[in-house]
Length: 127
Length: 127
DNA sequence: GTCGATAGATGCAGTATGCACTTAGGCGCA
DNA sequence: TGCGCCTAAGTGCATACTGCATCTATCGAC
Image (cartoon, rainbow over all chains, first blue to last red; front, side):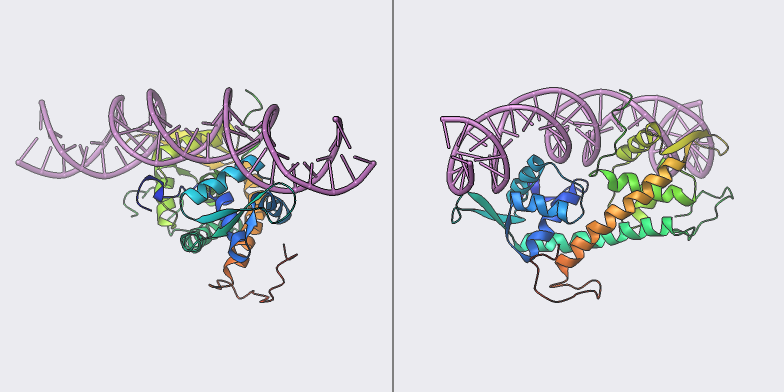
């Protein structure tokens, strides 16, 4: 968290945070996570993107990994969540809850998100 | 070029859907929306990105716009939600709710946000 | 030895993004 | 009258991200 990679971006975070969430309760490897995402109801993410995202999460300290060769077949890179990953994950939830309340309010008719006269022209200094 | 923008991507949609949500109940212009996002608790999006995203939403038929010169000061491009925008918005909610339940399940083990924890550790086939 | 499933990774082209900057109208004020 | 500031929208550029296709490699089944 010293330099350039310290501040995660906001937009490609659906995938990142899903991965972190899965890793909260169990360690897993990329191929497996890729499938869990689909099972969990998220639309399929490209597996290449999943692998690259995991590597990037490792670079930024959110997860750590090691090669697991204990099973037969290709080696698996096993990931686990770090402390930093947990913190980021819980912080993200707050953002997401705000976001979700925006969407929900919008869909459930017309309760104003911000008190403001809809048709008058006093847009001047509402804030 | 005609069909390239037809399928909305999943990742950069936090901004897009927030904008659509705000426009669900009111018409608004970019500068205003940019500020509402911050007020609503979303981290600041770059205003240039907001403007470009709005133009793109218009290109894909989610919103429509016209120049409002009724007030003094610089002209405002007023946006309103189209039918297609409403449909997309409601579809997005479903995806998001799946997503949110993933995160909440993950977090429930150390920071229960919603009293919904089944608290059984039989995570194997839960998702 | 070949096929298929598993497991991970990379090259490339297209797209999105953040930052800095520009354009432009209107206001207040010395 | 000029200057600074706020509002409002947009653009250029370098970088980052994404999806698609492709590649390597291990193993079991046939």
